[in-house]
Length: 432
Ligand SMILES: [Zn+2]
Image (tube, rainbow, N blue to C red; front, side, top):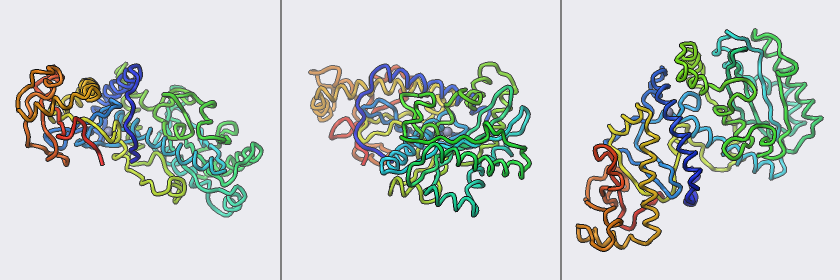
């Protein structure tokens, strides 16, 4: 996990936008939880202990631990965006380093003919193997040597349209030791069209469209594809083009799967429910983004490859944070109701009060209060924020160093569901 400096406080407009996206992801999760046949997806965000730690750094984005997560990059409206965003950043980092070192890259898309009513499963299976099937054998070896081919990162993607049904396809960045020109890219495209066309025909999936079957674009810089494709959330590089298939809404080939879920939520039409379930079954257990062997280490060195589950839990993680505890029943009820966004926003608001308090050097006041065991008369607000100090009970690793306090700023939450934890040396915790 790359964890560097504390985040600067975000501008209010960004906080509002981020919370809006989170709230809608949670509403989608409520719907998906009812439709899914996957146990891990149904139990995503189920608390493990009696209390769930929610840590908030100065970036004011809640980081939640002590819960189960499905980590699905395909089907989970809550996990997928986080996992994919992290994967996109990894790809951009690796690709930027490669290009900065004088390397070259091409962005390849392989698709197959598709018709309304086609089953997704067999086509997705074929597309997942597409790159592997094309880039093998003696003919490829000769070509790979000429191109000074290094390796590839591929991402499998699924869209759906009313007119043409399921459209699974694969995007890949092929990395080369040296840049190539447009003429060589065209030559590669023609060759791949023959290869991929042969695979499709042999496997009984018909002939390829000469116009759409294969696309090859020269990548000159990692963010270059930004000009070629729509920008999302303040930037769209090659990494995003590969990894964020979940949000490239309706640009080229119809709806992304999350929109099918959205259609079902909006219209209640059974066919959208069935399409979503077919999508979940077809993608279950499949890898969404794959680096060819050895490439990751070559581009990113010793940076450990985290699992999807681990990446899903990275949201909002900062080295310094203030910790809140949410009772497990309260969190799970919110997860099932799709209202986790509201809960986290309230906690983040309290954290914001807290961080501004720290900035005003009122920690001293609080320390004095703790020693006396009752509110100090001097600074009502900050003293009140640490009312009711009680040592002891600490189920998380930093436990013995932590102090449990009530947080009056959270008193509007039902049933005292949230408490605040404070470390003796200051308000924030520190992640090693
Ligand atoms: Zn999940």
